[in-house]
Picture: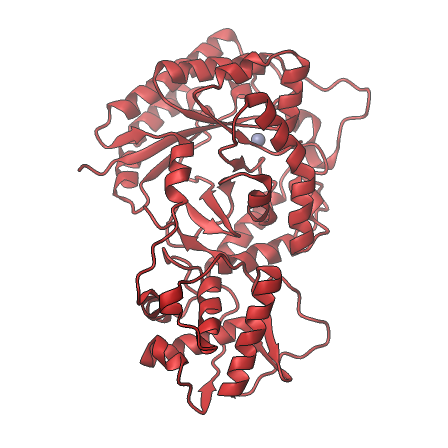
Amino acid sequence: MRRKAQVFLTFDVEDPVTPASDDAVVWLADLLREKDVNGAFFLTGDKARALRQRQRLDVFEALRGHDVGYHTNHHSTHPTVAEYLEPHGWADGVAEVVRRELSGADLIRELSGRQLCGFATAGTSWGPHVPGALAALGIPAHVHSFSRTGGGHNPHWYAGALCFARSEAVGPVEDDLQDQARFAELLGRLPQLIKEAAESEDRILHLYVGHPTIFVNQEFWDGLNYASGRNPEPGVALTAPRPRSSGGTRTMLDNLALLIDTVQASPDAEFVAFSDLVAARRTEPTFREGWFTTALAEAAKTDDIRTTSRTVSPAQLLHAVCRAVQGEDVNRSGPGGDVLGPVELPKPGEPVDHPAGLDHEQLRAVAASVRRTVAATGTLPAVARADGIAVPVATLYRSLLEFTARGGADVLRALPETVPLTAGTEFPWIADEISEHYGRRVRRWMHRPDLDVTELMRLTRAQTWSLRATASG
Ligand SMILES: [Zn+2]
């Protein structure tokens, strides 16, 4: 069978200011339905409240047959997601996301009568706590995530959620739809984009169309009113964006129709509903006897902490090794549930010092301490402590991989007198790329200029331990 790119369209629906942007959602939903294409529309809580207040529940009617997702409760209103996460560590930050976002997600479920297909990041306001909170919000996937595996896998798992990385190749398509020269360039590039996606392991092509509001306005409602940390004064009317001419709107809609026709005419592409894609990619890997031996050998091949396995994240693998050290037959029992990266801070003043090797009693005690932290918190410890010994988990990971590389998983059952310890890098290499990219983007206009993202970046790096590719591509 011909391998086709799976193409999906997404929209961020967020403008609570201009009533015309409500109509734009209906036009886009209708245009897609006429083409028999499913779109995913991510709404903010504030947009849902504005639709209810303006008695525009017909917008939810128009979205029947499409996917409905979530795009934060208040988007650019301060505090934004990154701003409210600023003072938090991991567990309290995840709880804060749930506390602030659940009412918006519930309202959209109520008004649409639907389950939500995903949570799309609002602008550049993100934290790793967002994917971390999705299960509690009852949302199955995260879109526009800053995470990536470093091996080109998209979607992937990060911080316990199925994540779709921000597309750097395409979009927002709205910028191209309003300019005929740019649109011609996009159409010219499309066959290559489709071909590359069809040939890639994961096959997806995310066409992020953008914002219905931009089909009727020339500028963004939030840039005008909420830039650089300021909320509008209470009682002062919001500045309305300059409207787009009706001819301009027509051009954008016609170009979008032509874009859809072009994809549909391609023998290498097919449109898929985002919710179907999510359901298919959430499939758990199947574990055959011997999977653990294979996973250890694969992970030992690289000096990096491997984030591209389709079966286990490095955090899950280390946890499995610790179980095996304690005598469990992991090859038979499987890797168990998800394990997140180490989020605790080193205790002040406590030196991290370890001997050159561990005897088997010490190794079993250290493994037991890792298991206790995972059982209590769902996360790895940063440093495994037992009997006065403190071993950074990265050192434990590297040492145990090197140890098993020589004799496979079986050597974990008959430990020698001493297992030597080899220091390893603290994070996968992709941790730097992700956190630096995030750190640059989050400092733009959407946030207070003095937003301190030190802790957000640290936790972003830590969660790269939880990365893995999806089971199916
Ligand atoms: Zn948005």
